Length: 133
Image (cartoon, rainbow, N blue to C red; front, side, top):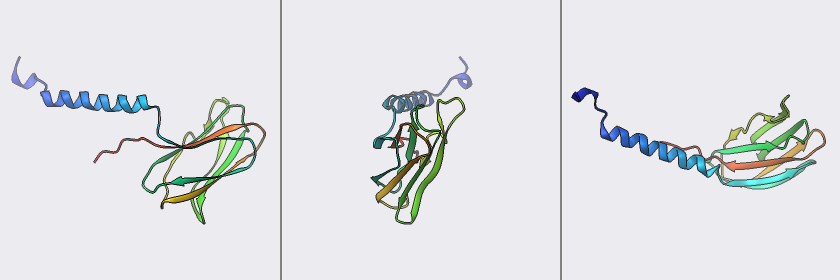
């Protein structure tokens, strides 16, 4: 085989290592849960969040209200605020699992206000998005 058609061995190993890394991340199924609570009426929770960490917020359960407001704040600083709306397919809420970060370490207040009847599960987890140098 001519020299220019051979694939370098180092590149093959790099592909293998990257594949194994992403497979391991996918098998973990997600990050560490910060909170996972059922919400059926207006509720407040306290959670500890860390600066420099990506968080992902989930609203799940298709039997929940059509809409739910969620605010995460520390004092007057708002880390996240949005209204989740059940899609027409009634399978998901939008925005879909939005990510957010905080500006400082500490205790944050989560305020959830369903705008209708039903129960949803509010989950915040640390995102395990890999970071490369």
